[in-house]
Length: 294
Image (cartoon, rainbow, N blue to C red; front, side, top):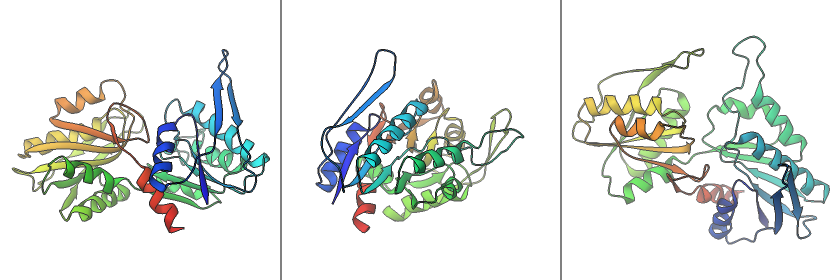
């Protein structure tokens, strides 16, 4: 039987997983010293146990990464049989190669650190670039929150919406298709271009079957909100009734929500991969289903 060890970044999520799977947690103690250094202690014996270590790596990501490494190394040294990492938000997943000379391949370094600390398996949710997982020599899985996101909007009265991917990347289209299939509706996508040096996003408009319909934009990460806002403006211009945004990882940099509202978005909803004011959907059922399949 797997037991759940919740790290500092994901205490409530770990509790939700325990409740969802009806499995016990591991009692631990953690704190920060006045100088900012991290303290972690296991309060019970975990020798020979399989542990699900729940620690999402959202900002401050460097702090959360160090916490995860300390937890994994401690559990390994004290005899845990298997250490399954559940990091719904996996930091540094955008830099999987050197785009410019001299750059750090941060995704590769993070993979090495997590594995060297003792991880046996890794699960994440809607990773920005699936190619990152090729750096893991342990089993590494990308799950999706698309079905949970669209079910939330249906529960709030959204009927027969178009599901829209705000860009034409393969993973984005796959998420939209998953959400559409879950409720028996249709989906579409837009194309975007981003300047790697300036970061400016340009979304290419095309005809969409949205006149008089609700639309749910499904995205993996929203930081500035630029991509989703561009899509929302196109949708409203073409006569969409109401536009909603469902995002797995709601980073929401300063001004992002205001930008989306100004573009005509009715509501922005995220998951508990990143705790916050819009985090109304739990990812607990997602990891629970996967672990039950093992």
